[in-house]
Length: 122
Image (cartoon, rainbow, N blue to C red; front, side, top):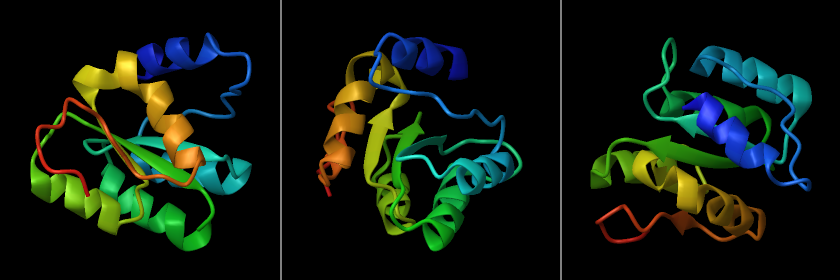
């Protein structure tokens, strides 16, 4: 999934990838070191899941926007992601078409939920 995301983002010259992390714990360290505008996390990250990582990133870097990727479209996961500080929620199946709109929306201070999520928006 990281290769797909990297490829999508590299196609846009106005986006710079400052770091990648293979798990939630390293994502926190990388976010603290680089202070990016946006952090993209997957709910099912190893070592520390994306929801826990989001919560810890927002605690130390409240201005950072977080876009959560998920294979789950359950309302509970989406609500928990937003409660942890995520600004957007994208279904893994929508990554190709909705990753960039999600980034643009959260940078514009709007919440974002991809169309592949069949549940009510937050």
